[in-house]
Image (cartoon, rainbow, N blue to C red; front, side, top):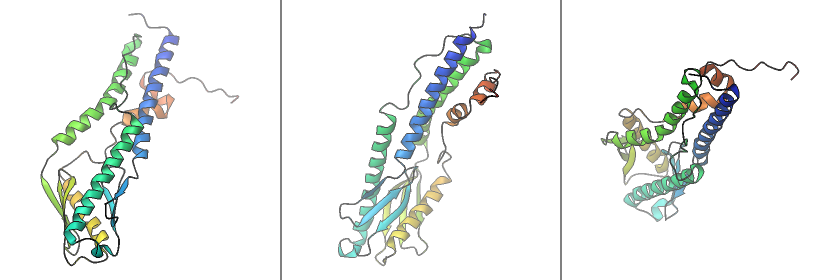
Length: 233
């Protein structure tokens, strides 16, 4: 098989690098844009702040909450604010990355480079974008076991199903530091849920970063020599 002209090879490499950079940039921009989601409940007594991964980072409760809510209503308010913050986070993510689950590469390159290395790289990049679907399947197939978490004083119990907060019980003796107690109970629940899950916090596109961070790495992977450095620059 005759190798393609070097100019064609370099053109396809440039296009692959461009599409890889776009993919990497889209997902990183979406992650950054949705990293500070928060919301309040309708009574304005509770504010929930999420982490970049969509988990609850802190629960803030106003000191005078008992004048507006019962203990059970406070628990319901936290769940409401959590869902609202999650909705805002997903809306921000969708707006940043687009409605399609990742930009799909339109077609593999036609150049028959030595050893098919350019075509192999295209398929590698396609596999990276397909990780979105893999993560969705992993998340849906993840254990639905119910786990619980408690604060140090056993005033708050958080219930998680499949790693997601689904229930909260606040004791009648909860005081002014109830926000910290709720946060502690939820974190305890996350720790228990993590024992049954291995995908939490995993960045699914390491290959995109590897190929877009250093051109020399890309050329080396393809078995090509890096261009000589201009000593005048």
